Image (cartoon, rainbow, N blue to C red; front, side, top):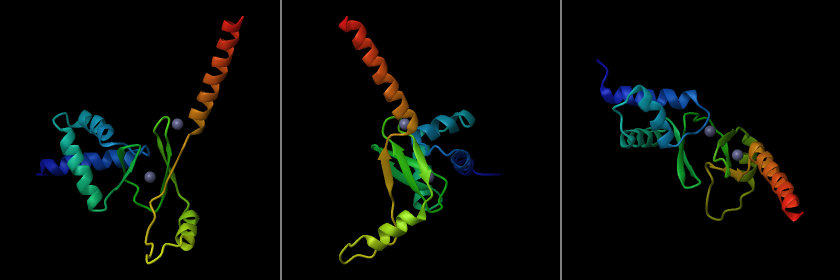
Length: 143
Ligand SMILES: [Zn+2]
Ligand SMILES: [Zn+2]
């Protein structure tokens, strides 16, 4: 018989591997609790943190929240501060360039953990739409 803890961990891993969204613990909990209604948010937290400590998944913080990623291959992240979505950036050249060029005294860089913060296309587009709607509204009130 498989232990209850193992089942919980398996479900968490299964969900993380099925998504590219880099969910927060709350998002993992929302998804996993559909299959295991008895699981608690703190159990999800504990499992995620243990898995991250053991190197089974990646944990990184951006926008004051921890995100989890089952893709442990070498990559960086791109974060949209408007809709808070996280994308993968598989570009080893950037990391190599930084490692080679960062002149940090008395220190040897072994790894980098870069997060590029900005706005995604969808958010830029919807901001532009909002602005043009605002302009149109201003024109109407100006009459
Ligand atoms: Zn966005
Ligand atoms: Zn990732």
